[in-house]
Image (cartoon, rainbow, N blue to C red; front, side):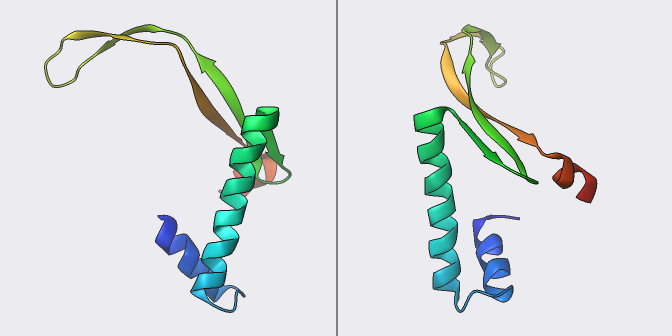
Amino acid sequence: MNREGLITLLAADGFPSKAAAERALEAVVLAIRKGLQKDRRVVISGFGAFRVRQLRAGEARNPRTGESVRVRARRGVLFRAGKDLKKSL
């Protein structure tokens, strides 16, 4: 499911319009982003946890050319599904 599909599903499940569903989704995404910037971790009980993770520098390969490429250290976001989410799948 993509963003548009999620907005349509939210609108069908009780939001008065697609515009209201889109604003709600934007608010949640923004809150998660701000939480990660401030605390480096966001936990939503029953759903899962997002956390910022430091990724090490290393070697990678360009799949088109097979050439070895140096990848710099960077930060990434890790998501771990919660127990309730795992059970529902």
